[in-house]
Image (cartoon, rainbow, N blue to C red):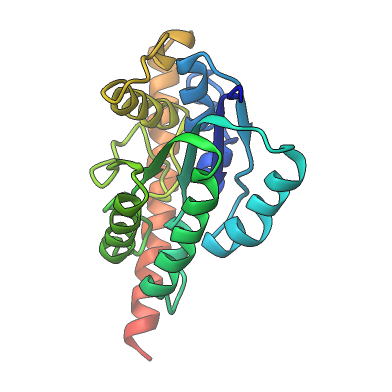
Length: 232
């Protein structure tokens, strides 16, 4: 059966969308990956999604509309919202993650999953357990694992320390393409070669001031949350 490109599930990071960065639109890393491979893209990610949303909404929708199609690559990036939810249960997450990968793998030639950054959110979330679950389940399903634990450069992540910027999405895609190329899926064009932008002194200053202002708000809110928790 003919394969029809790249399939992706996940949360807002994979859904994409948001502010321009130096005039570059914020698009999903998975969409950039598909463009880099020269393949069509089918995205089912939704903002705020957790693994239960992937299982209960995204995959059923895909199964209804895809008409049994097969894909060159299936992508799953979820866990960022799960681990930041009070009462996060790593075992339950792993069970759901395994079911999702099993369903995706049944109709994809390759699987690609992503871990969560170590520096995630404010207050910072401990991503150790979710990343261990992702790696363990992915190993059992022969999925490629893109390690994003060190992801978090200032121009690649927004001040919430969760969502990638436009250039952050491109950076994730180029990491994904590098991993895929090492496993037999050659890159046709780098996403960074597909964007055109100009950084002037004024634009840089305005961007730096905006970042500092928003970062100060996030830091203050995080400090207030920590104080509130310690006083309980």
